[in-house]
Amino acid sequence: MSSCQDPPVATTARWSVGGLLLEALATRDFDRLADCFEPAATMRALLPRGAVEYHGVAEIVDAFRCWYGDAEGFEVVDATVGDVGSRLHAAWRLRVHPTPRGDDRWHVIEQQVYVHAEDRIEALDLLCSGFQPEAHG
Image 1 (cartoon, rainbow, N blue to C red):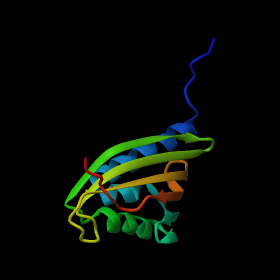
Image 2: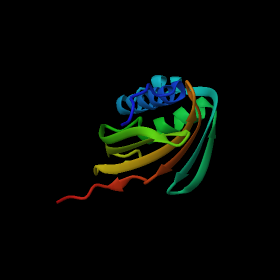
Image 3: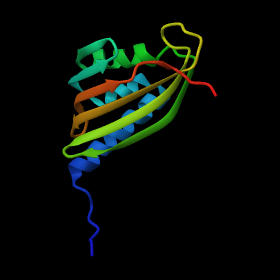
Image 4: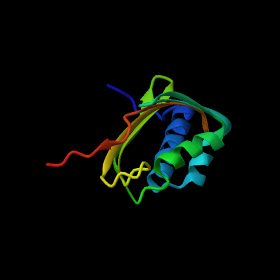
């Protein structure tokens, strides 16, 4: 027989910041996105063009703004948040139109992140699919 116990505070805090991150991304509210990060946060990103590092909340938020800020069409297809051991995991799949590259087709993009956070994100590792033309049919 299992017992129900409240999750540890650290897990609750990580899940909270994970939810706030997803909500800020879904609404493209870059000010709220910035509030999810410690001022000296870091992000390591594996993008289609290669590995990139961002240092500080301004650089991190600017990366997300560059990827999604100018899109006329923007939809969250799927999003999830949970734990993998001591790290927070979040993932999202988006439909974006047009892409920042000026392509007039809808694109799908998926990103997976692993986060070190207490109340706010201190370090984020991101894996990105890149902007993939949406398959029709």
